[in-house]
Image (cartoon, rainbow, N blue to C red; front, side, top):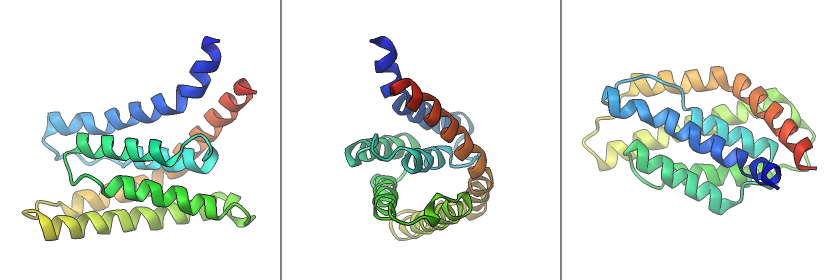
Length: 165
């Protein structure tokens, strides 16, 4: 009984753990730390492996929670999470989407659009305290580390998929 509950809730706790892991250094280093966008990467990988588990309401919750903790403009991240979910569900019939290279390229494109939209929104609505160099390094680190997170999520998804059956 407890095993089934744990296997069903593990991805959600995993994502919340990465949200805290990514946002905790912001409070200690005053937002000057360069770090990859791990939460964005992990959620994209979970959507690729198990999109049935993550409904749009959960993605909205994760995105809002991420934006509140990151102290940015609320609503941009959930929009991109829901866009990733929609794009993944539309491409179910294509065989080419299963290859890591194609998934990696799609992730890079979505992440670049996310970076550009945050840049434009900060430019138009705020005092423009957006550090382009720090955030571009974060995007590059996220794109480079994507295969590592993808393989980790794939192994966890297979392991918990077997336990769930």
